[in-house]
Each structure stands twice: as C-alpha cells, then as structure tokens.
Amino acid sequence: MSDKTDELLNPDGSLIPSVVARMQEARKTKPLWAKRVDTAQEITSLEGVQQLKSGDFLCRGVHNEYWPQSQKKLFETYHASGVIDKDGFERFDPKPDGKWVQVTAIDHPFRVVAAWGELKGKAGDYVVRSLEDTSDIWIVDRAIFEASYEFRTQRR
View (spheres, rainbow, N blue to C red):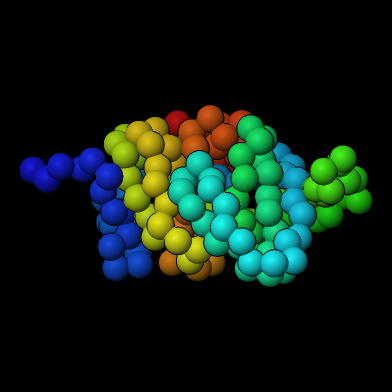
C-alpha cells in the first residue's frame, strides 16, 4: 500500500478515480470581498504561494483568507454589491443561480496542481472541481468550506 502523505490527486491534470467516485455537488453561499490588482504579484494563501496577474482580483473570504481569482471567474459566480470596505475591498455576493461544483473531503495531506500553481491541503480539507471544466481543481480549507458552502443534498 502506498503512503498517501502529501499525495498528488491530479497527476495527469484530472482527479484520480478514487476521489471522483466520492464527490458530491455543493456551491458557495457566502459573500467574499475582492479588489483588482494593477500589477502582477505573489501571495501566500492557506494552500501555498500563488500568482496574481495584473487585472486579477485578490479575494478575501469568511475567515480572512486570501486567494487570487480572475475577473472572468469572479463575475461568473458573484455580483458586485457596491459596498466597499476601508481597505478598498468590494463585497461580492454569490449569484442566486450560482454554479455547483463537485467536492469531497480528503482524510490525509494532499496536493493538487491548479492553473495558478501547486496547492497543498491538510487532512480534512476539501478538493473542489468545476462541473464545467473538470481540469479546474482547487482546495478549500475544511472550516472555510463548512462556513461558506452548502451541499445540493445534505448527505455528509
């Protein structure tokens, strides 16, 4: 049996079948805060070092965690509220007909390669993938997932 510590879950760009078989549908239900960046920069998120390109958005979530997001992806899922905080972040609310994604919790440390870099998850964190583009894969911390997502069915 192989050691699953820090296992790469998408070695060929797709999630391994044992992970896909356990996935459920969920979607984000809580707002996030975001602001556009004018210059390329590097940030350290919960999952590792990530790159922001000029024109991308720096997003802040329910536990003051940060991550990069393209304008296209942000506007596909959220709409701008017009409410801006003291730090220049605008609140973006999930669209009522927001996109569902596939998710499952992973019981050991793991990694995925996302479009913006390699991400690392802890035991209990969720691997998430787009239903529209199954190569679009990322990680959500367990506490953040539980505070900001809902399952299509309440099976847990």
